[in-house]
Length: 479
Ligand code: SAH
Ligand code: SF4
Ligand code: F3S
Image (cartoon, rainbow, N blue to C red; front, side, top):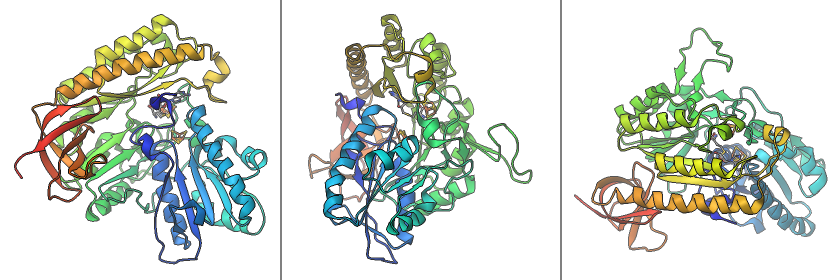
């Protein structure tokens, strides 16, 4: 299996999959919670909401699953192998439960939503199943289990955004935080399970978003990533049908929201994910150009370079439209980098269609890409309408070709930085050497440089001296 085809997504590295969260509670009820997260940034962000809700109930968290009274897994359904990993974990807990009969095991997130009651019945070892819109109900669900019942709540909501819940942050270093701006997705890409697991798209009140950013900044955070499945469709005070919800409240689009968050402080770096090629406007690009603290990086998933494939995928744009958006980015923001997502071996993909994916990669010159083999998901449009007919070995071979090409592209993109001086936000010590610090430039590329006396969360100017396809290396200037 290739590293690019595991359950990882967006800003969450493979090394963080299955990460446990740590908090202490002011109202200790003596019970310990082990909370593990899989999948995309949205799921990691939701785990912070869950931690906040349960810490108010007196739970403290632990990194040691052996001492847990309750184990919650926040799960992902995006590809078959993402679910497989969680099933392995659930089986690990089976024996534990025999030895520790009081232990409560719960499944949260996208698998909970997709598999619902089946998880309780088939797996037997699960006590709680809670979908992404049911986390406020968790304390009640736990009480039900303590009184001897199984507990399930997978109701999806049209308006839950957890806007009033102040998440407990996963990032112990206190530098970078996720802030959810929309939930759900209305796009119905034919390969994708997300609309079924996360429900209808809804936007969160912009004032609560700005307040959360201000609070993070005051607590020392220097970077926020605004999260949504399609950030460009953020629209406050409008229903998805375009009707105004409250005539007295102003409407706010994504470009306006970006500006509002950028104005919190010039020292707060703003990132966002994910942009949808069909909806990304020039207004967003001009707003990025206006505020130096909005990072020069856009994650713009292309999926395929062939028009018939894009049509079958129901992506709502053509190859030409996508390349026009790339051109607009390069024109309005010459220093902006673009990353993407690519699926290999989607239903009916011919060799010629695959070649067009390679050619769009060459034309768009993506700086970075997440690359996957197509994995059929139950209930999706593709599962109902098309045959998953590209053989596994062909999917694999195409993925390898795509990965090799991307490695070349990433290396030549990184070479462009050599000799340039970049503003780096320090994130900590390098994992490989205590003599080096590591941070990211505006373009979201990792930069390693000799250790300074500056603490994490500081900005430093680094002259890039060398690079690999994954990292930039440099020396600090003007200390
Ligand atoms: N909302 C984001 C994507 C969320 S899922 C967007 O529209 O871009 C992240 C990525 O997982 C997708 O971009 C796609 O490349 C990949 N993906 C989604 N469903 C998949 C499937 N069934 N098989 C393989 N990859 C898939
Ligand atoms: Fe899935 Fe498409 Fe929505 Fe992204 S935009 S979450 S790929 S349906
Ligand atoms: Fe996975 Fe659900 Fe995110 S399916 S990618 S955790 S929205």
